[in-house]
Image 1: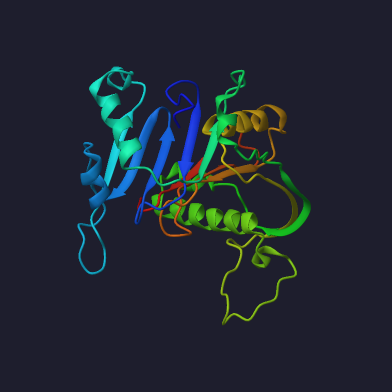
Image 2: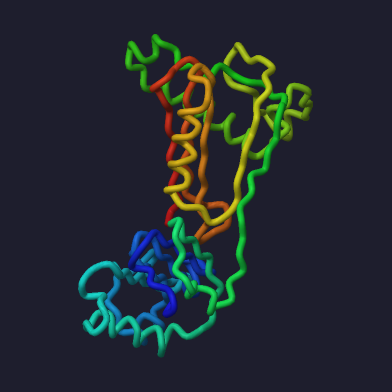
Length: 269
């Protein structure tokens, strides 16, 4: 980190580790967040606050420390900056593997990151075309909206979100030819008017910025047919228990330009 200035540009960093054990560091929009145990917190001498459970029954107390590296106290020569640098040199000394993303188009020359011998990774799209699926109606019933029927809207939204999630996972449960013992799975496509459709799925995997995701959404809106439905989903890296991640999903129903459904799920982090 000493060779890269994270206080400028649009840099994201994520270290290995978990929020629930050991150490984990994140950097986003200039804010450095450190999840540490009690012993490391006391040794570092930095100001933080308790995080998670208070300990007991096998769990140990955790602390979280946050610094906005773009604020004046984080300039070289100020006490806040000096304390952080001292803690990094004397306490946070264990080598760690990081994910690093600089979403800006310009890279300094010479690139200071090259001193750390990074492994470059380019996220290429995975394309699946003409996937045959059993599709429910993705249109919100006008009567539900007119009557402000929240219960019916939640029922529709839950069923649609589950169906979209199964598409993302490549589940056989939405395959028109799927046959499974109901003892193993009782899932059925929601609604009474399901039809066989073909969908196209594009997916990327990697350390991707929100700025890139916004650009992708705008490109879909400007280039895709206005009467066609689409869904865009993004999932964060898990910082604690595997499988518990923040998730955002957007759906534009067919023939509903300017109208969208959005689901936002957050983990216990």
